[in-house]
Length: 224
Image (tube, rainbow, N blue to C red; front, top):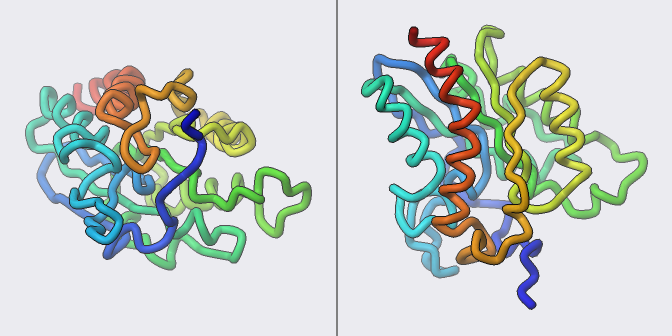
């Protein structure tokens, strides 16, 4: 039986830089995520794409699936990615949002999607007195990215089953009255897992559908 909870992708060097900005004149969307949001090509491991892992191409990762829906309302959408895989991996070692993500904060997004956690060291799940909690690092990134305290937030349940991380994320989500996006049983279904144990095209579609259900009303509220 395939171990669907094994993360086959190293947490470090997933991208060549940490922030990617696509400027335009419309609504401003920021995606804060890890390799599922964006992973640069790494031929040595057999990954040739430059998109969310492991979509079959850039048009099938959840970021671009969402952007196509957003363009129904605003063809001039501006968007950015804050790739936080390294931040997750080093949060117990004191990583700070300002280390690599100031450009993302300066982007001044209207909507920020936070969908990460899997690169947090597995031993954290068993710690009773960690040097830093995932919740505190997650909240610090949330507030840092919302430079002017005006953004609307969506927080996603993890693709990998890490109840402790989801519980801590949900508490931060509730603290600020943000939107929580449940992914149901996606983490335990073999058909939602593709290469490198990352979301297949079906997994990416389910992720995009779940975020869009909560995002569409926010888009309408901002634009209309």
